[in-house]
Amino acid sequence: MKALRKLVQLERQIVKSQAGFSLVEILVALTLIGLAGTFVVGKIFENLEDGRKQATTIQIGNFKKLLNDYRYKCGSFPGTEQGLDALISKPTGGTECKAYPPNGFLDGSEIPLDPWDEEYIYQSDGKKFNISSMGPDRIEGTEDDVSLNKKKKSSDSGDE
Image 1 (cartoon, rainbow, N blue to C red):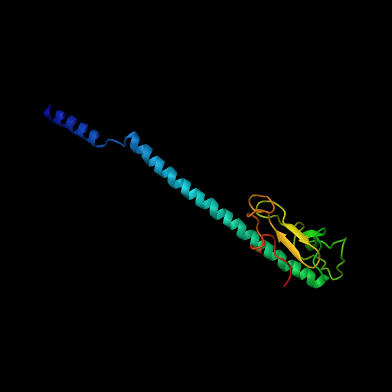
Image 2 (image 1 turned 90 degrees about the vertical axis):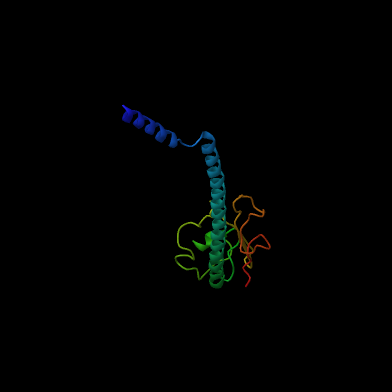
């Protein structure tokens, strides 16, 4: 019997020593995890947006190279009305390009959209061009616009 009582007392001591966390301790831990998670998620989205802006700048740089090739072969940049579509198919209006390559200057059947699924803004008088993206806010003329020439906030001109 004494052995049984000692066993019961030992069991009670073991149960008391294995007490879990209090509700307050759990709530504090969850709050700290939530705050840390908010910071991490914010940084991830910030890096994602920076990556999209960098991808846009690279794409605009690729368009610039293709437009310079176009000017070299055709004598001028495509006009605003011809747009970037002149890199895919031979323009029918405006200045005619007699040395236009059979497959165009850009592979594919469509001009790629910017990372925010918007069309690039292209303007040209045939001698210079501007190309830009409205950026994440999708509003033209704001500080979120993306172009090669950050100082002007419109695009890079084709002069070189």
